[in-house]
Amino acid sequence: MTRKLFAKLLAAGSVALLLFALLFAGGVWQSVPGFIGSFLREITAVLRDTETQWMVFLCLGIYLIAFIFLRARLKNGSTQRLEAANATWWLVCLLFISAASYSIHYLPSTPGLTLLAGAVIGQGMAVWVGFERRKQKAESGNNSRISVIAILVLLLVAASVWQTEGHSYAYHNHTRWIGPWDNPNLFGLLMGAGAALAAGFGLSRWKMEDGGWKTKFGVWRLASGKFVLVGLCLLAVVLMGRGLVHSYSRGAWLATAVGLAYLIANSEFRIKKSEFGMWLKRNWLALAVIMVAVGAICFWHLRETNWHPARRAISAVNPVDFSWRNRVTAWEGDLQMMAEHPWLGDGWNQPEPLYEHFYLPPKLTESAAIQMNDYFMLGATLGIPALFCFGMYLWLTLGGKAESRAHLIRPAATFSPSDAEKGSLDWLQTTCRAGAIVLLVGFWFDGGLFKLPTAATFWILLELGSVQPRMDINKRE
Image (cartoon, rainbow, N blue to C red):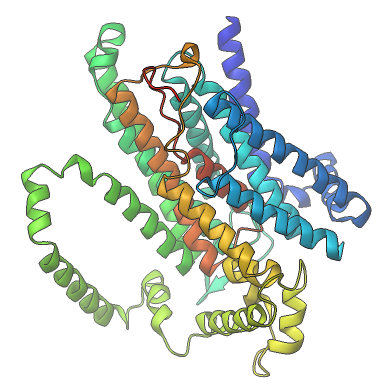
C-alpha cells in the first residue's frame, strides 16, 4: 500500500468516524449498556455541567476563528478582510451575539453549544475541502465532496433500516419510525436529506462523460460501473424514501419535495435549448393550471381514503387537527416574545419557561410546540438582529454571492479545470445545497437546528455547497 493511498484511506476513515459520531452518538448509543454507553453518558453530563461547559464553548470559539482565517488564506493566499458581502461576516455576527447572550446569563445551554459546534464543524469541513482544492489536480476538491456525500448516504441508509425500541410514537395505530434517534420528525428530516443527496449523486454519476475514462478502463467497464453506481443510488433513495413515509412527518415530506424540486430546477439548464425546454417555456402557465386542478381532484378523492400516509398529508388542511394548530399557537407566542424583547431576546434557555408561564393559552397544557420552529426560537432567544444575521448568511451562501469574486494570488497553486470538471463541481454543490434546503425547510416545522444530528448535517452540507473560488491561472488581483 503506497503512502498516498494510505493517506486517502486514513482521511476517509476519519471523516466516516466523525460523521458516525455526529449522527448517532446522541441517540440510541447512550442507552447501550457497557463501556460505550457509559462513556457517552459521561460526556453528555460533562457538556451540560456549568463548570465545564464554558471551557468547551471557549475552545469551540478558538477553533472557529482558526478555521475562518484558514479559509481566508486558502481563498486569497492571505487573510481577507471580512466585508458585509461575505457570508462569513454575518456568521461571525450571529455567533458573537450568541456568545454574548451565553456570557451574560452564564447558564449551561445545550442549544447554544450545539449552534456553535455545528458552525465549527461546517467550517472545518470546508477547510478540509479547501486544502484538497489547493492541489494541482482539479478533481481533488470533487473527491473530498464525493467522499462526504457517499459516507452520509451510507450512514443514513443504515439508519433507514435500523429500528430501535424505546420511545413509541403512533399515528392511528401505525407506528411512526424513529430509527436510531428518539423522534420521528428528526428521523424523517434526515431521511429526506439523505434521499436528496442520493438522488443528486446518482444524477451526477449518470451524466459522467465516457471519454475521460475510455483509455484506462474501456467504454464497457465505464458504462457498467456507471449503471452500478446509479442503481445503488436508486436503491438508497427507495430505502430512505420508505423510512421517510413511515416517519409520518408532514414537515419532512414537504421539505423533501422542496429539496427535490431544487434539484430539478437546477438541472433545467441542460434542456433549456432543447425542443422540450422551449415547449415548457411556452406552455408553463397551462401546465401550472393543470397541476393545480389535478392536485384539487386528488385532494377531494383522497380526503376519505384509508391509506394512512395520504390521510396524514391531508390532515395538514384539517381545521380541527391539533398538531398544526398547536404549532401556530406557539408561533404566536414566539412573535409576542420577539416583540417585547426585539434587540437582545430573552437569552438561552429562557423562551420555553416564559412561554409556559405567560404566553401559553389556558386550553393547552403542553409547551413543547415552541421548539418546533427554530427561526422564531432563534429570534425569541437572541433577538431580531441575530435572526437577520442568520438570514443574510443563508442568503449569501445559498445564493452563490459570498465567494464568487475570490481569486488566487499565487499562480503556482492554481489550476484551470475543464468544462466537464466545472460541471461536475457545480452539480455536486447543487446536491449539497439540496440536502441543506431539505433541512432548512424542516427547521420551520419540526426543528433541528439545535439538535446535533440534524445541525451537524445541515452545516456540513451548507458549507460544502457554497461557491468555491475561481481558479483561473490568467487572473490575479
